[in-house]
Length: 248
Figure 1 (cartoon, rainbow, N blue to C red):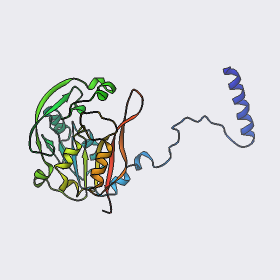
Figure 2 (figure 1 turned 180 degrees about the horizontal axis):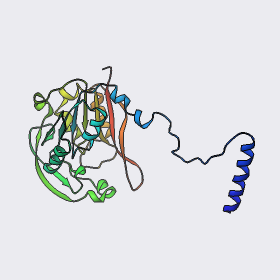
Figure 3 (figure 1 turned 135 degrees about the horizontal axis):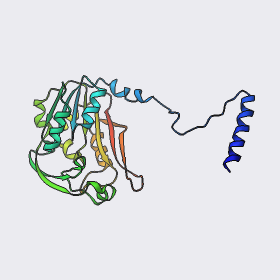
Figure 4 (figure 1 turned 120 degrees about the vertical axis):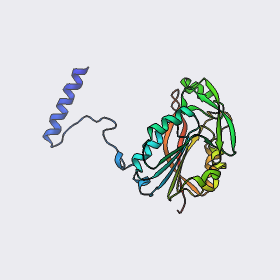
């Protein structure tokens, strides 16, 4: 069968060449429609972001990336797990960066966090069944005590230069972070908030609830920064939603 295909292809190429055309094999992904990879984040660069809050910084994955996009911005990062905080500080040994070793929430005090074997999946909320089934390598771990503060209470220790971008990725605790920081968050230009479409942690708010909260604060949904798919069936479990302040 392969020799028949090759013969037919050769004959087709000969006919097209005679007519002035060239036959080439098309591979999906050979052409991209829309902006180039380099231009895809120009919308963010054009917003003149001068201050970034990285809430749920882990070991600095987002902080390091946003530094490449906004090299002049001041970045404040918040990470409650001590070992992750230490890695964050070592990784981000750069100017215009400051890290804090506590969580942000709706109340001041201490709270237990469920430390996952895979640190980015650690959460103040217990991990749900779907999360364990979709990502079995994240199950298990230990419970630790961490400090929690309210963003509005500690804002006086930060220097905000407009425009402000706030990223919140705290594994189901996003509504509590917002509740404790409404005054500051409401003044931001851009929010990047992790939202879930299915429950991955017990008692977490899903997309609609987060959407209603930030919409009520004057933000509009502008698509997603990234999405997390279920490796079992490909369904979308989470998305880091982009919300931009309307008319600002």
